[in-house]
Length: 180
Image (cartoon, rainbow, N blue to C red):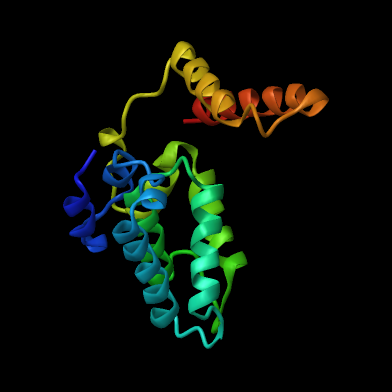
């Protein structure tokens, strides 16, 4: 966990998927005005860098940031900065001068769906040597990852959908690691 000054001095160009994932919980930005303003400024930079003339004004940028902080509270502060940089760099496709909350949500979901962020790391670093990848998780590690996911998402899941979602997620984790 970095200090507030450390977080404010982060250069997104130096972030990688691996080191961003090991950062500081983004919920800290909800409690600190300077950190919130730093993320807000990063959203505006994305708007300017993709030349989005339609959609995101200052007020909707603030609403978008509030929504992202609420919906993706489990990501790290550094991951937010990394995703914003990736959007600016076109890693999530072209926005065709249109940038609204939906586009931010799509990019965050795409980043979040990448299995253990490793898939994203490999896709961004095409020259990666397969021998440098971490070893495949054991069955016990897969179960621990599943349990952690379940703990984070239990409130969202209810009744019959809980059992279906639990089974689907468990199978998804098993298949993804068995295919590696």
